[in-house]
Amino acid sequence: MRRLLFLTAASLLLAACGDDKDKAEHPPAPVETLYNEAADKLDAKQYKDAAKAFDEVERQHPYSEWATRAEVMAGFSLYRAGRYDDAVSTLQRFVKLHPGHESTAYAYYLIALCYYEQISDVGRDQKITEQALSALTEVVKRFPETEYARDAKLKLDLTYDHLAGKEMQVGRYYLTRDEYLSAINRFRYVVENYQTTSHVPEALYRLVECYLKLGVTDEAQKYAAVLGNNFPDSSWYRDAYALMQNKNPTDQPVPGAENHKSWLNIF
Image (cartoon, rainbow, N blue to C red; front, side):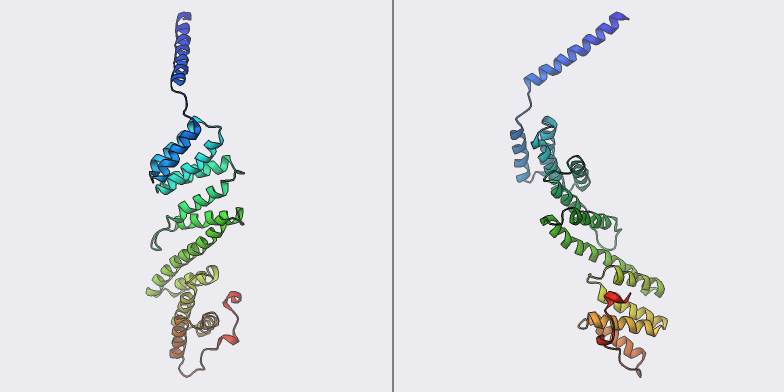
């Protein structure tokens, strides 16, 4: 038994010596060299190879400043390669380990881009859109004075517009099936929650349309007036006006904008 233990210990010692010998014969490459090689691959648009090369910087020189930079660049390379899930994982690891680093804002921004660029058409599930919304909001909240926040705000507007478009699509579907109450819920949601999007004029018109179908003229007139107050030159207002006139041809015209509150305050 003692002989067996001795042989085992000897084997481990020889293995360690072999590793030391291998390291001596193949020492780590200079960190600057590794980093520049990775950067060259990135410049050549060899994104997958660049990501691996930046990982090698961290592997061979884990405690250097170059390794910290390489983590972000590996995430960027994966993002450019379209490997969004891997990029997000790499970048989330970076922000967790280096919350105060100068590149942390950029890492958060890249995470947001990974989600934003995966936003699908309005006919598909919107989980990615919600993730993009959350990530973009995080950039604006954490780094409000940066160029990343300014771009994130622009992308937030487009993301909200996308989500509003999804609600409009569902609302139109209910409308074609004469499910007016369900349609009203969708169109009201757009008006109340996505007020700055391009879909609001149509949503207001659709509310006029739905309420007239239900015979609730007062509500229809209210939304027509709100539409006229905020979008008087919109074709949707002209159509709403025509609807109201056709519904009640002997009544007075739809009240003008001057007699009604803005839709921003009406709910």
